[in-house]
Image: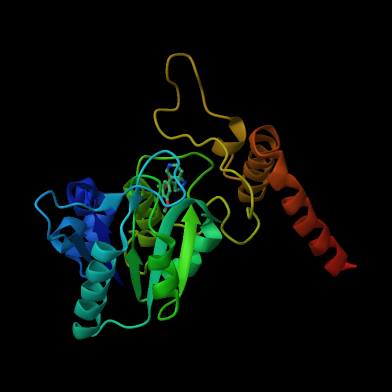
Length: 250
Ligand SMILES: COc1cc(COC(=O)c2cn[nH]c2)cc(-c2cccnc2)c1
């Protein structure tokens, strides 16, 4: 997968050089190109923003630099043999970022991220590129950040860990919360490891029983209880799928 990021804070994307994403880049599973938007400004102050038409607070990111930067990032990518880019725009008004969307994005060969600062990007930039490539506006949560770069790190990590060969055998996304299967739409339950006792606290007996059926049942019950506590909205979805299963069995 090729990733391009156009940003006024390229150093904000340095974490893409470490840990899971860093290893994926070193293995050639990910090819990341970070572009400094200010390289496509030609005034003394490297201006990337201006006051909003219609008045109001804050500033809006200008069309010019974005258009020149995206044209070059796309041209570079095509020249390097990449194809079918998807423009990913982090914004509070976007489609909620979920594991399902992470899976969808992980199937793409090329993602071009456009993290905005200020009040956002002049809408004409998105409208212009939407005539050439698919554009996905994505929200990582119901809050407002000063810029979309943190969202790029979140989206990139969730997507990269799903790419073949990125997670070692020791880690797996098979039992992820929200991954399809018995634990779908459930939050993860408690986990334990050695030592068997710590500060007077032991391990739930079932986990030491070696009875895999009971262990699976206990884990699902724990996940269900945790989900009911913190995300009751997911329970309907989960119960519905459980009902479907029973329904199918009849
Ligand atoms: C592209 O337009 C943007 C992008 C961002 C940065 O992304 C997020 O905040 C975000 C992404 N998922 N969840 C939050 C912020 C605004 C914005 C809106 C209103 C006032 N101030 C700023 C607009």
